[in-house]
Image (tube, one colour):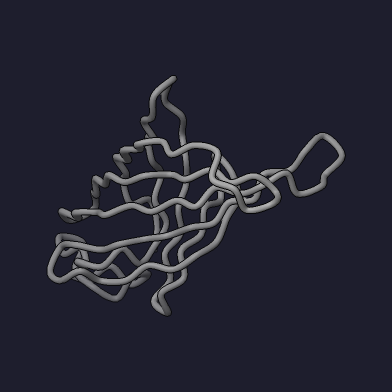
Length: 126
């Protein structure tokens, strides 16, 4: 019997990141919760724990890369800079882990810091 909403048997999980994921994001200074959405057209969205957009691409079976740009706004809503998020991920069924670096830039495009980041995520939707 197949899962009619996903069009595949419940025991089979696709080996692409397409779908919605909740994540624990670990970096120096603490952990946070995030949510990612990856589309079949290669878009990558950060929707919780910040807001940003970018692209993902396959690195072969079970592997993918994603890059997301997250704007940083000041108290008046003006652009104070951005964060360039780059993660190399390994997917196993409905889970992925990734490691990478988030680079923080000021409004003039100067790199202000680079932070190592690790992500552990669980698929929560198609």
